[in-house]
Image (cartoon, rainbow, N blue to C red):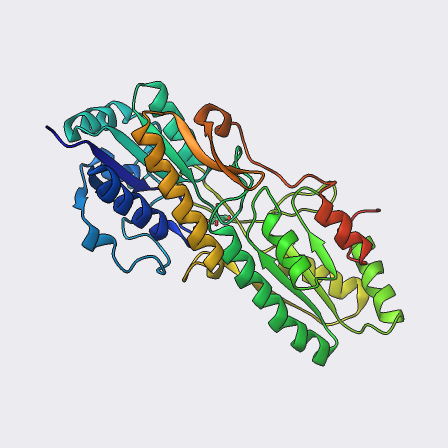
Length: 364
Ligand code: F6P
């Protein structure tokens, strides 16, 4: 009898824990169901240009603790809007029919797509065109709809928290304002969690626009109370009331071209001017995405990978594996493709942080 065959790809920005999912899917598919596993290289790029390889147990052995993805990834290969670059301009082409043809040629019974909102949206579109797909959510931002948590987030929070801890001592020694900028384009989960874990005095998230004079007042009040330093944690997507996000660059051939960054620098200049207190900023950036996953992320990634294989065995396609109220479950991809999961402004952690004196840059 012909063996069943599944393919797996990682797409979009990487995060810690991708390899743990690849390992879990491959090992379980081979051990428990005797499937064949094909690893697609560089996300949908590999499906467009037929770049793949068979994965055996030896290929995934020893990768649990490794950051990144052994399959490679890209955020430039949306098959429905594939960038074609000439010397003068970028135009876009729909190459989805090529992907469908190549998948057919690969004779796969299911495609496992590991990615964030963009990838899962593409997965949903392919599923609507008849591709048997199971999605696995990933992102440091923790903003995928349909799941309470994504792997990669916990590791990012650890890294950011360590950053805050390190800034704390130097802020205190020099009596400065220290600003740490963390990832989070639309959702401020990393800033909120790391801010709370690191005892941030001010936490700024995209969901709550901040008032700069009010921040300056908060810092001066602290000084009057004998606190000569301030730790401010800001998500890259945070913006002032009535203002805009800080754009760092435009990646012209990416499906989501805007890259944020630099809000900590601009805010630092403003606060130094308004308070007279020397200010420094630090951008955590991709440090949050690299390196070995935390034990929590290793476990979560393994559970999600394992659950994905179970869904395939049950013939349940068009779903994303997810965690809801601490239970593993699955949700329709259609539900996932509807935007980002933002921090509710009445989130219990915001209330707790406020009760401890943290400022979110608003009047509350
Ligand atoms: O979506 C994940 C993320 O890490 C965002 O937090 C960040 O804004 C973006 O990706 C950075 O993308 P790139 O790796 O292309 O710079």
